[in-house]
Length: 294
Ligand code: GLN
Image (cartoon, rainbow, N blue to C red; front, top):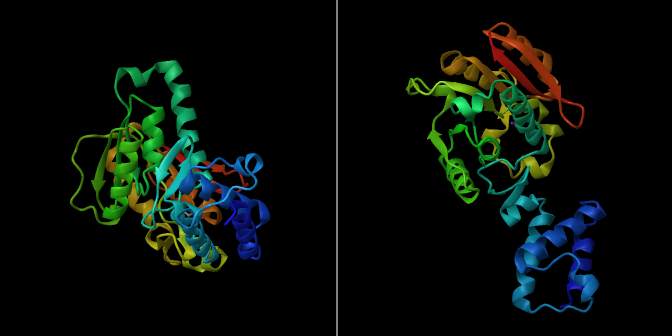
């Protein structure tokens, strides 16, 4: 079949579900991924014909797109900042809001290192709690080469993905299999962390009906949802942890639930933190919080 006919089939089959530009983007991502064809191939070779074996993965991807499976899970890759990461259904697909959180950390650390050059004096110890695909930890390790980065997750299968991603991106990260809600086993007394960052589960069950099918049906619920009656569960646990393991001048960075900005800020105010700052994401929603150790 000709490649342009397959493109038309993508549009016909997916037209009721996705906007036209998105279908184009799916189609080009698929031909690039499965056939190593550039997106301009149809302009250069309008009559390009595929053999059955080449068509097959395109039609398989189409069937999954019809079920609204995210393209990142179908192809097994996602982009985060300048990184390419492997993803599967055991980890959340990295979001642009989370890139903004990482950028906030990088901007803060870079501006401080100009003044006091702490990055050269000793390596910064960073911990990412609930690392998932490893996106936050890997982006920080890549961009802060003197930092010693640790990342933990409750899910062994997520850690396997994160480990592969760290290796593929050439960074050295210490991964820990731990449940932050039940860490009575404790943590080795060293290291003390300078930065603790987390994008924990924060979507309340009551918000489920606002969540799109491609997220709800395919992404890991343990990484997304918290009970309606205790949406701060993870923030409290991480604060308890940080009160023990965050250095004196350490900082906490969080991704947060957009509807609970003030409540989250209030929680930090009642504990040993100061300079609590809320920040909006590119969509104008309260999405990030930074706090310093008091
Ligand atoms: N921002 C994610 C979403 O919209 C939620 C991430 C999380 O719960 N940590 O689905």
